Length: 248
Image (cartoon, rainbow, N blue to C red):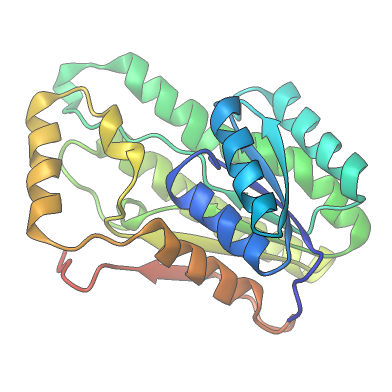
């Protein structure tokens, strides 16, 4: 499918998978709305994209705030008339055991990883429904399929995203011609690991990174692009993407 001049909103666009996806889409001729909290990084990425001949707009956004999400979507629609692609990528992954009772981290994961997806979807879907087309990508994880020690709450949030994605697909695709894809990566190089406050789990993740070649953000971006360019009759409902060396 020709995606040139489509309009995309990418959350968590200030780094990692989000930034890589924004660059990849822009290189294919997609107009990209860059949504995240760190405005300086968004401005730098928008400048880089435009310097390479692409089109991008920085949208300072807090996905936990419904008003902020609606403002981002409305700004992108006002500038370009539509939103064709939504990449719900913003997420947090601080590891800790349940009996550490880091309840602030638990709540933050729920707020960003689940409520953030709902908020941005609610801000964007009315436009997609009105135009009778669209493609939503929700970033889940291997952690949405398999539970790991230290990741109980994170796994719960990503399982919720996977379930939500399938429900969205069943409800939105037949009625409104909106495709929905759940992206489920294994280990990916990202800033997620910098959020780990537990020193034992931080060392465990550092050791894991030394034991295998992680996926790059560009790998996930390429997978998103593949699903996006599939024929309109085809909805890739799930994409499970693993490092070759990751056996669990």
